[in-house]
Image 1 (cartoon, rainbow over the protein chains, first blue to last red):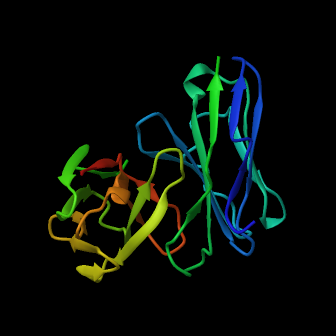
Image 2: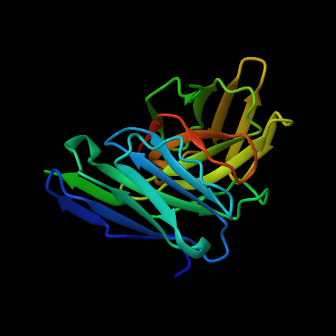
Amino acid sequence: GAGVSQSPSNKVTEKGKDVELRCDPISGHTALYWYRQSLGQGLEFLIYFQGNSAPDKSGLPSDRFSAERTGGSVSTLTIQRTQQEDSAVYLCASSLGGGYGTEAFFGQGTRLTVV
Amino acid sequence: GESVGLHLPTLSVQEGDNSIINCAYSNSASDYFIWYKQESGKGPQFIIDIRSNMDKRQGQRVTVLLNKTVKHLSLQIAATQPGDSAVYFCAETKSSGDKLTFGTGTRLAVRP
């Protein structure tokens, strides 16, 4: 597709379970970002990948959160032992990166509900 | 840590009027400032950006103003339309393509 694709669009999980959220960025985009957005709130930075550089993980809220980006393309955000406070919309974005402009393209997000 | 914030959480304007959405930032090291629009149920969409060496930039019906002296950013929308109803976020970044730090957002409601 032409845009950033995230799956699943909705996920309901039981407290304590692990979840994986997937992001397919726009082809050719070297930068990939994960953000979290709680209801009616702003976007909280989680992690940033740029090319082959070490990712900026400074926004991950705890060691239950991790992310990887395979082959410089698809990224997976994993939340282990989910808690109710993890409920939010998780947004992924990609951009050309490397000084080629600031425009980041966002996916529709994954709405995570922990019950 | 340093962050980007907004003065007003909600803004209601009459259709056809001009809208002004404001934002205060605190990271003087930021080189780019960006405005995003988020419609309900969708991801944010880029509107316009401005580099720190500029004080004004115009797009289609939108103008962004940057005042580095008081660390203030604003988005002006001319002839506001119902389709402009959304939440608007300002964001900042140290360099083009780097991670973005977002503010909390302003909801713009357009009255018919």
